[in-house]
Length: 438
Ligand SMILES: Cc1cc2nc3c(=O)[nH]c(=O)nc-3n(C[C@H](O)[C@H](O)[C@H](O)COP(=O)(O)OP(=O)(O)OC[C@H]3O[C@@H](n4cnc5c(N)ncnc54)[C@H](O)[C@@H]3O)c2cc1C
Image (cartoon, rainbow, N blue to C red; front, side, top):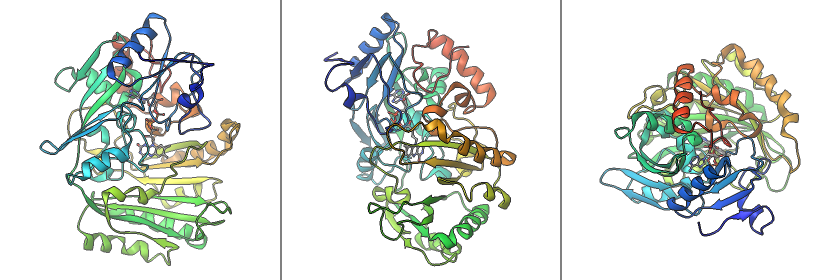
């Protein structure tokens, strides 16, 4: 290891602070790893000294923050190579989606990236990965071909569905519980352009937009992936003028079929009424971040979600009037029909994902104070909820063991705990979305 950082070292705070400003690890020791060998040495040291291990790439998905232990940061491991002949990419542990998108686009290909281009590609993929093209191509996890990983015995392994089917199944979906991934090999899809973008409707059309979008999702081809958010924008200068001080409905569109067909499909949404802004049109995949327009600056946030079996009109009452941002994503399609090697991603039968997000929380805010508001929404949605969770969207206070368990099918969770007993019996990798040994 070239260097390690202790609590009083300069650089310690900068290294441990990631995107999520209300949830930062405070480890005893940080290993800023630049190579797989440094990851291996860090795991060996943690095992020898019985220090639990946390891992961080960008800090977008920090679980319950660690106090103590050893944090491995992976931001320096950021190489991406694309093989156009096999339509695959090799991505190192610290790679962000914008890097993969740019490299893949040079060959007319795209990864199954999500709403934000600055999220870490490896953790997103190992946690499932619900992306812009989800209904057409499934979870990002479904495209994993190989995982390079340092397991708790400090061995660096190249794991494929053929080399070790059980460990591969557990790693892909079980995220950081079975080792520190140093790189992934992932499949890319033949998409270079979309019919996509965003439709923004003003306050007076929010309710109509939500109801119309809901009905519209009932009969769509798998080529159409969409979601809707209702966002109460603050009345501040940083917010673009059309949205400032208004509650806005934001419909996100990603259609991989023909442009003319896409236009026809989106017609009922445009018929809702005048848009504050309408960017839906032919779009290179390299510009796909404009579909969700997620914030890229570090922030404090608290979020809760439910997976839903159905979204009848009355379920929308639970969402309208919420203080905070709400988001509903349309699932189904290829998400429910996995191709490729089996993985442990759960709840493929859910039809919708509904989230409440409290963004822009000032440093020092106790996110637990927001729990009653969020729980009330979840309670109101309970008649249609599956009870399941999406691992990637469990953050901070909401990433405890009970919520993590809900991210998996019950039998799969049992299998994961049994495999954890085999691969990490001391639960060295526990400062994460933890699956304890059986
Ligand atoms: C603005 C925003 C938009 C998002 N959009 C989407 C979306 O569209 N779809 C979706 O599915 N998710 C989305 N997410 C969730 C995101 O995929 C997860 O939070 C993901 O874990 C982020 O990975 P990261 O590396 O950026 O974050 P980090 O906080 O660095 O990592 C999260 C956790 O992953 C584990 N981990 C990280 N690297 C490794 C590694 N190399 N080996 C083993 N374990 C590791 C660690 O336990 C770590 O605590 C979004 C999150 C945000 C904040």
